[in-house]
Image 1 (spheres, rainbow, N blue to C red):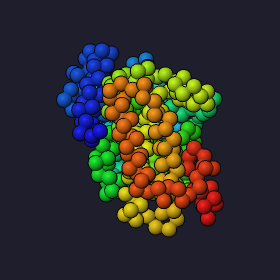
Image 2: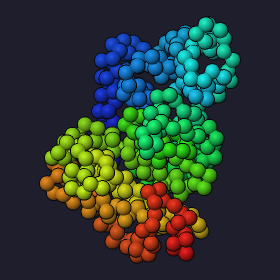
Image 3: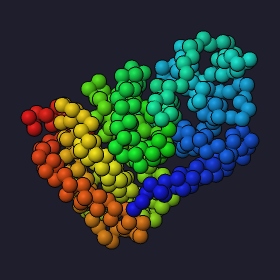
Image 4: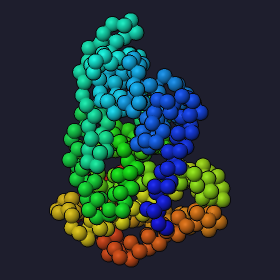
Length: 379
């Protein structure tokens, strides 16, 4: 299945859908934004905006993209007192979780409170990683709903003290993907426009409600190998969301939001059908790239051993996923094409690498791979 050739058209479909939804909500939107500039419609916050009901966020999201920016807009500081404006930058204030006003006069910004009193601030520009991927360095209020714990309670996360430690790790890992699996790197470059690196809950993720963005949960122990794994993984979610944005409703003979346990009749099977099917796409690409990194000896010493452990663990998860989804009655035509692609890729990877895959015990690995556990078990 040549999904590489299908991506550009699929992305156009997603962008057209976003434009339609924006127009339905604001019929003057294309007086303000360039209809032809598709870069605008890759902005993750536009997807977050459209999946909530409050119109007050729009001006601050599109301010940096507008043909003729307004002289005064409503903005919102987060729980650290920081205002993030896409394409513009960050305004650090002492006003936490407040509605404020941003004004521009003769190329100078002013911030005022609801009483029209000037608010002092420090400005910092946007940070771009390699390939013009933007690194967001603080929480945006519209993203807070994604950070929930096991009790579905929104939790605070650490971004401000984490991201700077991992800039080189991210860039190095992205370069490795570019060097070893260029076709997939090209899709990441097109699909992933922004990232957040944080520490806290939940695990790393991507969400259609913040499309074209990945959220990476990292700590001080994580380096290039971790970022290789997680850029491949979360990037795959964005890519597969794009590829199946319209067709996800036609992949299966049952609704794509069907609980997995209803299909397998195993009450311990968590999640929904489409979300679990995503996992086969992620593993198809994680393991393909890792195989190339192993064969080309891109890592040495501890990092090489960690790569082998992650590869073995991921391949065994891939095996389990392929087995779980071996349900012929489940698929319509496109779904069957995807499943056959996943199953063949697993078989090919396993046959080439079965000695490596079966050489390690990863049976005691938690959901998030732990090198410490792996090293102790396989010393």
